[in-house]
Length: 115
Image (cartoon, rainbow, N blue to C red; front, side, top):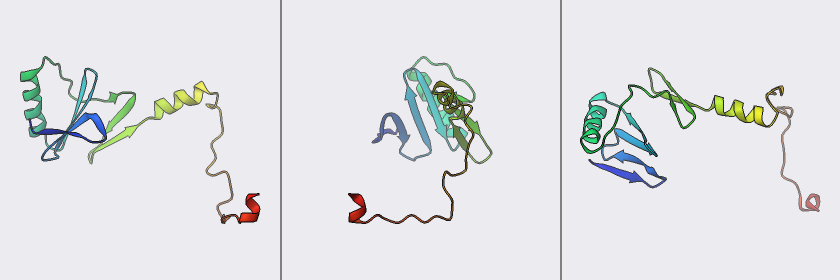
């Protein structure tokens, strides 16, 4: 079908024209695309080879919230982070912009200071 496996993940395939990306996790497939026509073509080819059902738009995948915008997609792990904070008892912590004064300039220590 013109896809090749990417080097960084054995479950991600990119089309030779780089306009369609397929990500597979167990029995879930996400198809990322620039043009609906290309996605439809790939989807039809997959359907000819495999039994599948299709949802219109994915909003969640592997615990990641997929937020669709006019210019692309935002991937959010806000829910996951909230669960981690609750699990370790940090959900009531007070956020701080930075733990030190912004005007402090750190310098590399000397050899004497290492000992």
